Image (cartoon, rainbow, N blue to C red; front, side, top):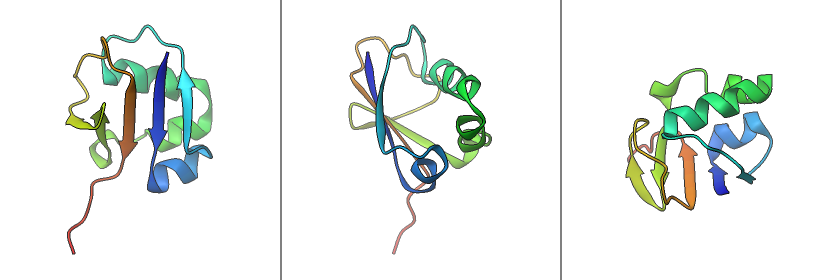
Length: 82
């Protein structure tokens, strides 16, 4: 079981701030593919991975990062400076 947190417009499209997901996905990309296959709202949120960033247990990661031992994944758009 992994906690998945959604931020900004990702949260708005999916309609949830967070959820617990049972998965056997090996990588972040595998998990995104599983979620995208659930419903259209997930597919829409994850349609353009280049517009997303991920953090595993609060550390920035890549989509090919392994999920073994990870408790939390955050999915969010890139931050802008200001």
